[in-house]
Image (cartoon, rainbow, N blue to C red; front, side, top):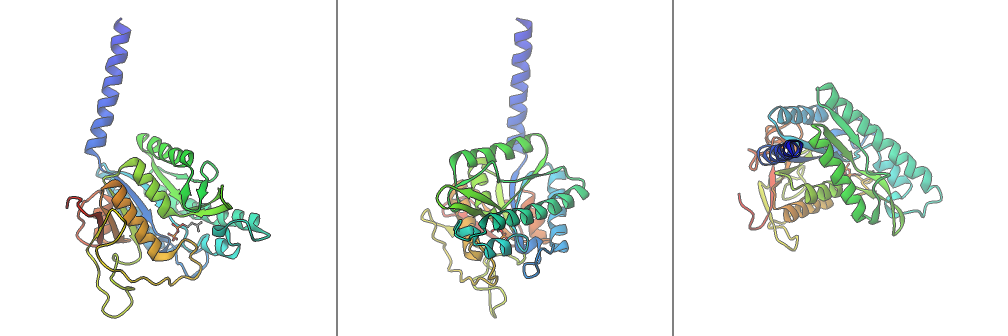
Length: 301
Ligand code: IPE
């Protein structure tokens, strides 16, 4: 009887402390764009300054008790291999298996470097690969079991006080043999299941502009609202400057960010690596002092 009571008390305190942690500590899902942490035009080259800016933002957020789940893209590690062998389009290339393996080698290499940078900053980062546990039913559509496995892996790592670091990956695909699962889709799936306080897309520019940022007269959009149909309140003209990008460039990224906002009701911030707004957003701010905030029409803020 006494033992049963002790167990009940233990379970109750574990549950209440988990609940308290959930309600008190912000949970932030941070997508590091390949353009922010690598030099996209030079094969397999890190953007050391961009990565350092993100690492210090995550370090400060964790010191402030936020729970942070990191996802990164491929940048110059993987897009070129995926493009050369047509991996996003399936298994038509006669040497797709080599291309699949080489794409994975590059993205896992980048993951190793990103995890290393977090470890050097004293953060217990653990690399988490979608392949082989996850596959897609169709390009960018996760099989149900895969989505659940990812969310479970992220939740378990966060509960253990670790910093999970996922990455866009080459995966097997039920409809076409293989495909590319982008970091943006991963971020979307994790956000839908983990319901973060906010979600942050870290870029190499200050946010989303009304036209390509290098174009004369480009204006930073501080707020974008998204309707339930995915339509944006503001027109954004995009241009894909990287021929090797196999996952749809900026347009696909804004669509993914908008989908996260609609699906979770949480604000989605697009900020520049190393900026003040990046530090605020990664720490869980609902309204950072800079960058672009994308939110569902009707959501508070
Ligand atoms: C691409 O992921 C993954 C590959 C294997 C090519 P993302 O589409 O999220 O990568 P970035 O952020 O655009 O580089």
